[in-house]
Image (cartoon, rainbow, N blue to C red; front, side):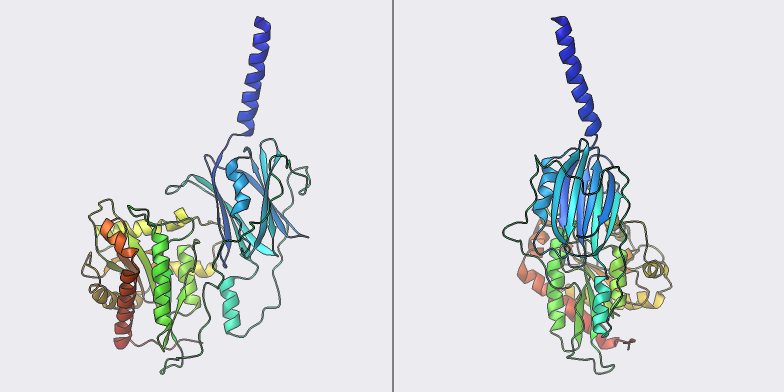
Length: 442
């Protein structure tokens, strides 16, 4: 009897040990962020994820093998997060490839570029594995080519990575627990228009026969939610709403147009926002945010410009540090930096641009004062990464404190948003009245 008990105990221990070996990690969340510029798949886990990515053709697909994990309900529902209108992904299939390894097959709608990288814990997130899927040609450059009536005839080639396992890449998965994934019967609505629109042919500037271009930057997005209000409002949602309304107002002006650094709920690195504005030869750059502080009594609107010599106040320094952490929270691959981006962010000899930024900020702040109480009655300065364009006057507008219950309510009110947008546009007009836009290369 005692020997039988020992045998049973030994079997239980062996099963426990095997399970621990095969499931050393747990996927706690899986998210998908579809956008015209790129689609991101992010998986969050309790420990760093061991992975291997295979790039296959005929048909085009990506195969991601994740080690030391077991199939869970979180991974099973990943396929349900793919919408039919996703620009790049046809469907995702998830299955238990073998004990301790989950295989995620991403069926593509055509050739793509991909970037897979791991992120250490940041903000409210644990360890993350991020897969970004891009078009072969950069979306921004494609629109610039269209604008200049240039046609690209050569496409870069995506070479498949050699598999490092003995099993063939298309080896069958265990589908007893996960059937073949089907797309949702009713596709969810999605943003279909391009992020940045080409220039219009009407309302040219009389002085240089072109439209004044204003880059509008909705803060945060995607993996980076920004600040949260007491009632659950998210900064990334409110900033995009205000940016879109401001774009509509600017586009209605006879001599102006606006371009958005993002037009949906997806993450854009801080430096990429700067590069976008420069590639579109923007005359101004306005980054829109909604501040938060530990004290819910903090309130008021603020305007910030870049500083080369340090922050003008402790609160400005705190805010710049918090906003500059956006790349850590949103998730940026540290490999393969864009040389144009690197040059842009390192070029800090921009005293004249900062001076113009202060003039713009003062004009905008003066009109915002008619809509909301000011947190500070002057333009503050700090080292905001998103304001580091060397040749574009740039300001960051903190529309209100989302952490203040009263101001959170205002930020969600259409009427307040409209008044705020009108005040920013009035400030822009006042700035150009005494600082005419310079002619730029076409």
